[in-house]
Length: 181
Image 1 (spheres, rainbow, N blue to C red):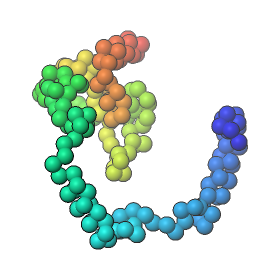
Image 2 (image 1 turned 180 degrees about the vertical axis):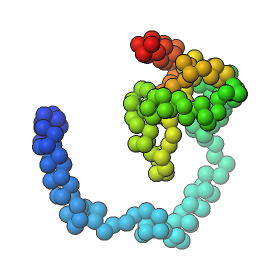
Image 3 (image 1 turned 90 degrees about the horizontal axis):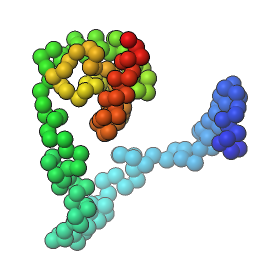
């Protein structure tokens, strides 16, 4: 079945198809059934041969230098040298009013939903399985401007997107405010 065909199925048909595929791939019919390959269950966990191999590689690389590209990836372009550096603005202090009470009131005002992707706060889970609160974003990027019209709730993923092309996002959120007023 092609992907285009699946999209044309009704929601009920799609649900049945997914359940069927899930049954077909579960238990002993799954290619990975009974195979545990991570952590202490790994067949090579704590094996002496792996430790010896690591030592050999380490010795072989002694005295070698990484390429400039690798050094860049390792963090040689730190702070001011980084292309994303914005003059240390992230180290600035927030206004006195920017506290947990204000942040929670903004989340409530926004009905605990990200104002870009509209995901609900209760559905946002971090990589380590913990629930995350929505971040509070300053529309004009001025950390001292804590008026409620300058703040909105964003999930961490969308908040990271707003760090690039700031003029676009400032305009986007200001237009959103005009529509709500």
